[in-house]
Length: 291
Image (cartoon, rainbow, N blue to C red; front, top):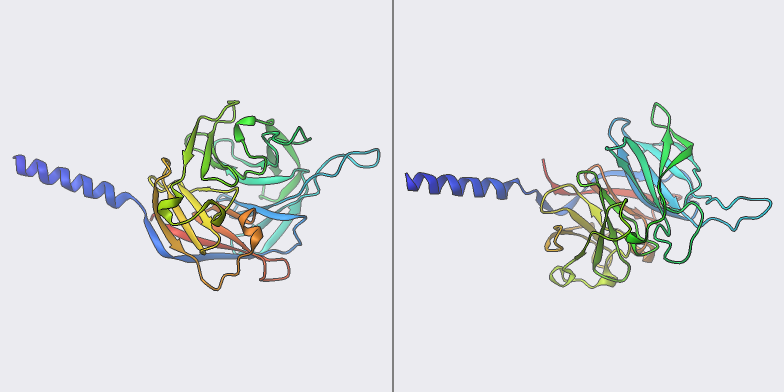
């Protein structure tokens, strides 16, 4: 009987271990989205809404100073594409977008703006906002407030990822291995994750400065672009290094890939490839085989 119990326990352990997703050694290309319009300043992050079968790409760019002729609204746009990577439409809700994501808890497309923390002084339209969509998923120019500026996000240029299960954000801090865990209603970070970059064989200036993606895969939740070594690094929520997936070596990444042009949506890490196409192309890479 003891032997049977031991075998059963071993089987459960092996089952739990196998439930963890396999890291794909060489990242698999899932989709390419050639940008149909020139980014207003910088292309930032990518969102996906399954029910509409649409991808949404947000531009970032500071708003002009307000005057009698013009309100202090950012000229940055948000663009939608279908699941074949074909352009659908754009809108200008007026935000300097840093992170865009679909929130299944509110059923809304939401954006986190530059300077959400007011790290460099208050600016208009700072915080978290929902972007209105038509019944077919087309973007509209209108939007609504979700939360105002919040010092818990830290770095003014952070591109936070959203975890809908816990209603928390993961805000990568610049020039460091720190990721702040934030709940929107709190004015202070919940906790701090120190990514073990040393175990991954990288330094803080090798990797994406402002972004870490949330995969939703248990034990492999945090996904980061290693720009200098053309790889995708995987960490758990304690910051432990789990492994990496290699990107194509002919992918031409540039200095701006440290600061923008990435995202995690629809089970893929997105990387902006500026040299390809008239306005650049987003590559979506599958790095975790969780099915």
